[in-house]
Amino acid sequence: MSDRIADASFRPASFRPASFRSPGSTPGTSRSDPWNRTPGRVLVVSADIGAGHDAAAAELSHRLSAHGLQVDHLNFFTALSRPVHWLVRETYRMLLRWSPGTYAGLFTLTERSPSMVTAIRGLLGLARARMLARLAPDTRLIVTTYPFANQLLGPLRRTGQVTVPVVAYVTDISVHPAWLSPGVDTYCVIHDAARQQAGGWGARDVRVVDPLISARFAPTTTDGKRQARLRFGLPDDGRLALIVAGSWGVGDVVRTAADVLATGGIQPVVVCGRNEPMRRRLRGIPGHVMGWVQDMPTLMRAVDVVVENSGGQTCQQSLACGLPTITYRPIPGHGTANAEILDRHGLTTHVSTPQDLKPVLGTLTGPVSVPGSTRRTGDITAVVLEALHAHERLRRS
Image (cartoon, rainbow, N blue to C red):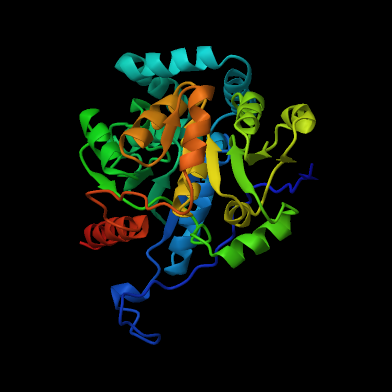
């Protein structure tokens, strides 16, 4: 058994101010040209709960920076006090690990009761002064990748305390009502099913965009797979199933690994994230166990199939790689909600029982073609630039 751990945390990049130029513009253009000036800062608001929200924010920041925009990153929880930050994050982690049924109940309750979301919005409103204090004076647009950020920023936008557009990027394929807040200008979702769901909750301007996934996640060749296996010390031959459970390593991963192993003919490669107790428990199971993996694109090039349980960022990465993806033992709440939509639209295969796992693993081979959305606008960068341009014209008028 191999036991390799690479530990890295998300650190927002620092971007230097740069001039934004329209296509065809050249350096040296008169400064009276509105396209030859940086239209202020773009603020990307994320949250350090798990790694998916931060990963989407990092990818967006990279893309916007490539367009010459000045980008800042803000952890939403810095608008809250440190004790509240710790309490929210650790309670969420505890519920996912030790009381998933309670988390599922809260997820369902807030989904069915608009008053619950309104109450959360009201409580977060207590932090409006701290949030406003963190907005640079030259901020021209805000993008969020975390639902509670919408609940704080949306009302500020609606009341005019925030005077710049607020764009929300929904990291899940299933849209929970907690993502939606009065005042948010535009919602960006990753599938037409999510657009319809958001519209059903009352959202107006909803755009379908490509997932915020690094271009490094892409299908590979046979030689690329061989090199990737060598990189991680994995066997040259035989089929490998990558089992993922997010950066926190939540869900029934131990039983999932045992079920995959019991099917025969395929070896599990388990990524435990930062869940060290889980990694120790898996040492007795034949296979390959890893902790936090920094180079996930290469690891995905090494395997034949992905088994996941949340339908989040890692699932989107595996689909971008063209890997057959199975949703198995999904975590309650957003995991089961995502699994339903993913399976319904042929993006992943939802397996409900250990008895069904073997035939599914036996039939899923080779790269797959993922069905696309029916209404896709492309890169979210285009949505951000459009909103920036419209705001600049309005501001100058």
